[in-house]
Image 1 (tube, helix red, strand yellow):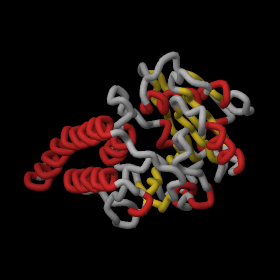
Image 2: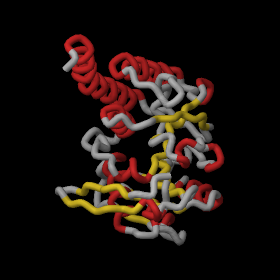
Image 3: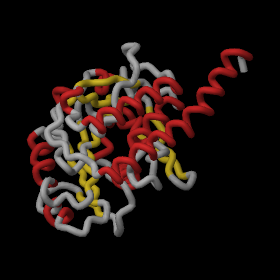
Image 4: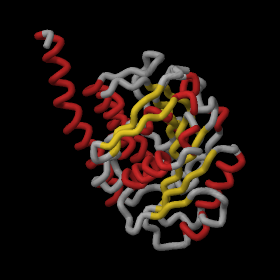
Length: 268
């Protein structure tokens, strides 16, 4: 691991420096954005505590008992005054990690939704995210773990559009396979994410960060994940989600693809 330092740029135009010497190998944070997850939040926290990782919960303006139940545990829990969306919740997590010297000693940040859809198993995270070979590790679900056909079709269309327009490969030369919510980031990468997809109701958070990764040439690895719980989206919400992500990919991907083609033809 590089023993130098990296800079974190804060909004607006404020900057701090974090020494890489403080980042202990295999020291991991589980960041849990949650909204009205009173039925599952403690199950998720129990999982992360069992894995002996630092756990941070961001309650995104829940109106149920999510905050109260999460606060029973001896972990940092923060609450947004109102529901701002998943992207804003993760961005709040980034801000709180920057403020905490103990959390900054970690070298990997995992994102784990509060609905218990996934369980964190640190042993299943790829070694590349700990040894510096990868900046981001993306979870990939098996087809049988996406039981609702319309969800599987939507995911295939998103991935086909992404790979067609961006043509980005992981560190093994494979195309990107999924927009799964379970991910791991190196600390340096996580602290330098600028676009969390805020303003889209949380629909494009994972996709927005993936697009930023391509534009910044971050190294990506992929690893299989097991789905523990899967609830279908209602049809109206599913349509909004599909169109939101697909239009976002077209909006970001077409200019990127054209610029890439121009460089290839004209060398500029």
